[in-house]
Image (cartoon, rainbow, N blue to C red; front, top):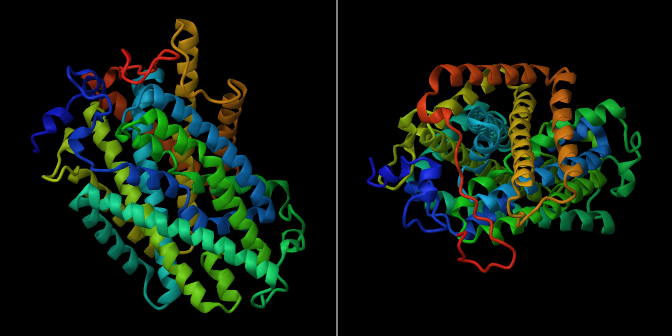
Length: 498
């Protein structure tokens, strides 16, 4: 075990309060992550662009038609409230693995156990969706090669990358995010040029904004179709809470976290609403069948086969990036759970380069399940997995919102210092976000194709409750104690609360 393991074995609260601790030092510093501000900034920026947009958006379009644009706006508003709640918590308690510890601190140790393991489960399920999408993308170039072969090769490659060094991971994520962002901007610019100047000849008629209402109107599938699309829409936003995972790594969380979170609405409008508006203006929504990424089929249908190949390479990059981040997020959360007594102590073991190797190997083994699922259930697998990921995602978001509400009530009751990054429209917007998250859970059960995901999700929660009762003992039954680093109004950095 690495010499720094003795430090890593402390609980988060102990690491925060040990004598002589540096203010910005992460309680998981033994991991030696090596992530710079540049890495964290682009991870936050790229977290809004992934398989949910490049591939999953086809399912949302099929379910709701052009009304999916409104669904992304509504869902984006709810996500923004979740992120603002997480931001207020993180600025007050800037610790890594934040939301699991916040749930433990403000809702009780079982809530922390549930949140941490459900987040790890979310990353696992999202990674299954991502490896499935990767197999679909590779089928665009190699239609005669079995999908599972590509998935197996990718799992082994990503696992090896994560075992080398976290700095390698950070550099890959930086370049992956840069490629994704550049591709989105160029795609939007190219799509607008196609619409304005009539470049290409779409097989289904002229490109233009009229396509948004020319095929059954704005709500062609009715109210139920519109409501049903939220199960896929919210899947697209899953993973954006990675900003909370990196909070303890930022040298100046009071500045970095608010900036990252306040950029969420712009990212949603640019990456989702504007992008899908361009897509459905060029290609009528009822011709997007989900057999490939909408980004690829647009340019393929226009005869721009070269652009289609470039975009396919981009969406492959997005999938690899997402899987890379999934393994990182799940590994860090499992490591933190082990430190709190909520997971086997073996998950705290590090390689010489400071990587929690057992968590990486565990995720690789779990992802091999994706290989089997793509052999047995190739046609239905992606959207069932997406629904299951949505359930896990909204459970984590619900815990974040409830922990935040509990914190606000405690501050009001005890007369604590006011927050430096308070949520807007408190408390109405926070309770509205909770209601929306519960609505998404209900819709997962209402929609027949996603109902099995709700059953599996509820079984998961029940198994966690049983595991907590049977396996967790001692310190794991104690709520995390976090240092409140809020400064009094007007106090300069480095004051007594640092």
